[in-house]
Length: 188
Ligand SMILES: Cc1cc2nc3c(=O)[nH]c(=O)nc-3n(C[C@H](O)[C@H](O)[C@H](O)COP(=O)(O)O)c2cc1C
Image (cartoon, rainbow, N blue to C red; front, side, top):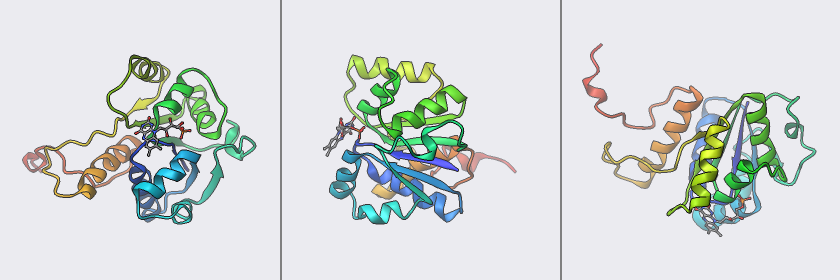
């Protein structure tokens, strides 16, 4: 079970494509979408909120602090906050566990589970940079939504797949979504 949180940064499509991939592999997911993320899904993508919710096995509202996963006693394996707003990262870095997204992140860090954060903001303030350092030191993996261009991407889909592939790599899930650097030089 992978817990996916979508927060209100640009790049909702990263979360949607990750959910679609995990569904295609029958990997169970729980999903939480923040209020601003809901608006951004509508602004940036052709998907409706209901379509996105249906990509997961379990859906919880961000203010649902009574959901099963607001307690560390219910087991999920890893959590990914994608995209991750700097406000959400700031809350996690500063121990503000006022919504389900922040609480799931807190559980990962205190229980030693994998937490992947996919920030999207530019430029970054000193506060953002310090918060990123804090979450990294606390045990999270910071995977900025900054696709590489060495695979000669031809479409937005290629760019999105690069990031989703990197997330899946971190989760230990086999995928061919990204063109790997010089992979043709591998010898059998
Ligand atoms: C269209 C739109 C795009 C946004 N893009 C970003 C972004 O890329 N990165 C970011 O950190 N915040 C972005 N924000 C601001 C966050 O949505 C805002 O700080 C919000 O409070 C985040 O709350 P949440 O993390 O609980 O969703 C954006 C807001 C809007 C309306």
